[in-house]
Amino acid sequence: MDLVSRISETALDVRLPYRHSGRGKAHNYELPLRETVAAMRRAYTLIPELRKVALTGAKPSAESVAELKKQTAGTLLKAMERRYDPQRYQNIINPWHGSLNQLVEKLVDLMVDEVFLMRANGSFARFLRLENGLADGVYYCTDQVIAKKWEKYSVAKKKGSTIASEVTPA
Image (cartoon, rainbow, N blue to C red):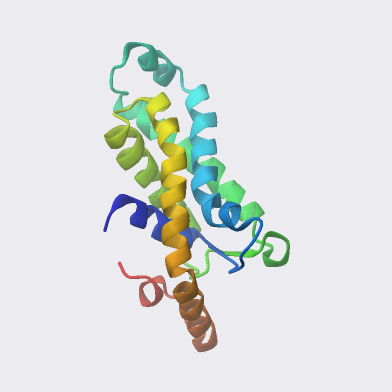
């Protein structure tokens, strides 16, 4: 599975947006990705070594990357927990009732390891330039699978089964 599809699938495991069209659809579909990038941006400014290597073009150390992941995951986890109200935020957070912490960690790992370190070669400026292209891809992939995800969610909810492996392919 390609990177954009993996990010989309993971984002849908974290947050299942309501199906609707019109104004706000793009925001609704892209929210987990945009929140992850915003959390990374905030965390990046707090880690001196990352700012230092940005000037030299060197690869960041494993310790600074681990710190970036933890801070980003914490911010993203809190952001998703604040959006638990389905009526207010038009979504279901953690629809399959797995470990939200692990799902957030998986999304952050994809963004840091695959996008920031691999695609952007550890350059935060390059990483930020990739954001809109990734968001477009996530929007497209989400739009293709959202109906099926809601069907699977409805079936799982009727059964009383909330096991992630039943609903989402590994």
